[in-house]
Image (tube, rainbow, N blue to C red; front, top):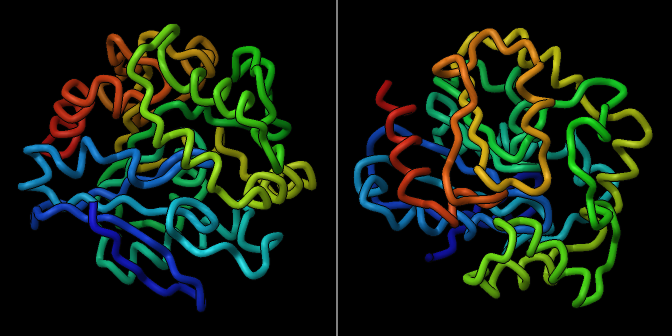
Length: 268
């Protein structure tokens, strides 16, 4: 995918865009990953119809590292980037898809996106204050806020992003983790620990647009039962959408089902 650059607050933000000119969709990736993880969406047949855009968050992928890590790698910092990015590229009236950390960022930014037509999240259990991490997540085998990882730790992380015993895990995902600015993880963790996170349970209760929640059949990280107990008045189709034969990275593992579900969400 060809990289494009947009400058936001003097920082270069990389992104990737499909050829379609129809309804817009912004994809926001997970912790230590890249917009390139949405390659199977941006190169799909439906991307010839819809305008798909995938961002590299600051310090991730091919976006520049933050000059002020504590400010940029925070819930408010990411909200600032997403809202300004959307406004500058004319995406604010479209649909938004957030994966894992990207889903949390999307929920947190939703009040700054008043013209959005709908939100889709997956790998993202909405968290309250204080966050019920032990209920929202299954036993994590790694620290998502650790600044540096060994190669073995990266293998463990990426293996957990796919269904158990997956045989086709792309090496590029490991490279994304390896090349991410470690301060992006450390500072985000610090900012969350010092109370800078949003109450996402309240956010989903007060949304006035559809919220689609997808979940991989073999998701290893997120506890589906936790999400099922939440009050989500605008949940699309009134239930979590299961993506078969996939774990945490459903857009890659079962791209055909993911893309068809996304198309249905867009066209209503």
